[in-house]
Image (spheres, rainbow, N blue to C red):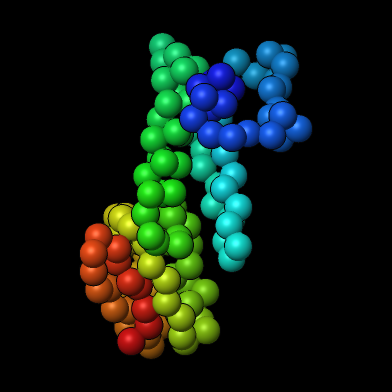
Length: 131
């Protein structure tokens, strides 16, 4: 996993942590991307009969898709921002891929709070805002 990540990104040695085998039988790989205004975290959990290299390659694919997008918010963070925005009564963000979780959270929040969200797609990016 570490070699796969190191071959795809510039990683600082002090930020790489490999846990001993006695910590558990499975594997997971995570990567944190820090930008000026946001920090995104990516996680992929290994599965039986899936090599560590395949798990790491899946993470690399997700991170590269995020980095190639002009959207500030990643797919998995977007759905978590819906409730705080609704409670604040204002806000907006851009996400590259509106997930089913995002759309479901919006629908649930709109049923319980007096807010309406707008989703406008432009140039492959979706702007999510309170109307």
